[in-house]
Image 1 (tube, helix red, strand yellow):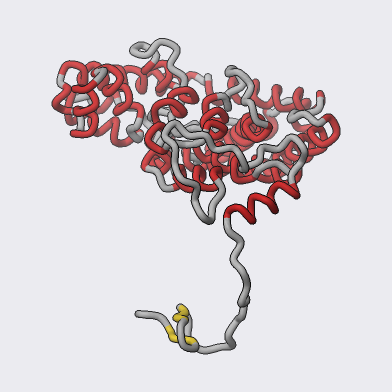
Image 2: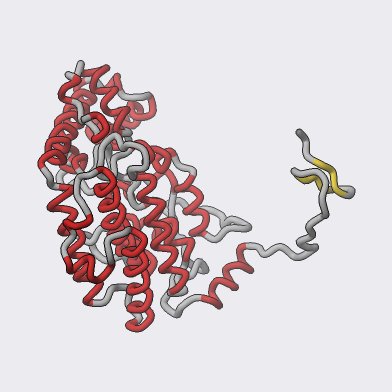
Amino acid sequence: MAGQRVGVAVRQAHAGGEAVLVGPFEPLDREGREAAEDAGMAPGATRAVDAGTRARPEEPDPWRTCFERDRDRILHSAAFRRLAGKTQVFIFPADHQRTRLTHALEVAQVATAIARACRLNVALVEAIALGHDCGHGPGGHASEDALGLFVPGFDHAVWGADVTAAPLNLCAETLDGIRNHSWSRPSPFTPEGQVVGVADRVAYCAHDLEDALHAGVISAGDLPAEVTDWCGTSRSAQLRAFITDIVETTAGAGLVGLSDAAADALAALRRFNHERIYLRPESRRQADSVIALLRALVDHYLTCPGDLPESARSAADRSDPLHAAVAHVDGMTDRFACAQAVALLDWPPDRLPRGLDLG
């Protein structure tokens, strides 16, 4: 359908009913929105004005700030879409279990809730949160162990900023937040990047616990009192408690962070998850399967670069075959990596990683 004509110059999607007028008005362009944004922000928040340095200079967008542009590029990128097929905790996630994509969306929700209350740059926070795990390989954190054999010190955060996101030509502030979102990395240089770093830990501690509870891996009664007494047993109660604490602590101290009580509870929850979920014997077996499979794939592409897709082959011819092989494998989804191992390596089915729903 071509839409419904209303008046002389307008077509609308829906026919009938009363016309809902929004104007006329002067549209708010990028510069006007940057000025409005600046007026409502906390003193130390990152302004879009005079920001947005990119590796390849670009003309400003007429309507979007530089950080909104970054957010949109990440959201529409193939690397972001592929997160839907990458492990968060359980490989080959069953219905309702998280993937790297749903994790990124939940981190964005937690981070933007904090940023709005703290009067920070919401668009920058959202861009960093959506892009923070785009450098993750298939099979969860085991992919870092696998690819670290070929790229010493391989870190999904650094790889995500410096390799995966490179074609998007993102702003320096966005790349810094992605590169340094992990607590083992240097602190991001913007408060928005720091918010994403703490929101990432809050989100995954709460939702990984929920997935494990639903899968029957643990029970709510297993949680230590230092967690339940402070933030309860449900994801919603935990997120509410941590978000409230971060907002109140940040507003009071002027620094992004948690109170002592919240930090202790979060550390206890993360420690419990590591002991009872991430490092349980079955998780380690699956991780070992992932590591063996991914290393075998990289070795194969180094030996047979012709099996790389055309885009990766051309990159290998121009520069570094090892880098091209690692980048290709890192970008795979769980199922595609397994399918390639079977097709190219005749990988035995009993050595493939297996999800909880497969027994």
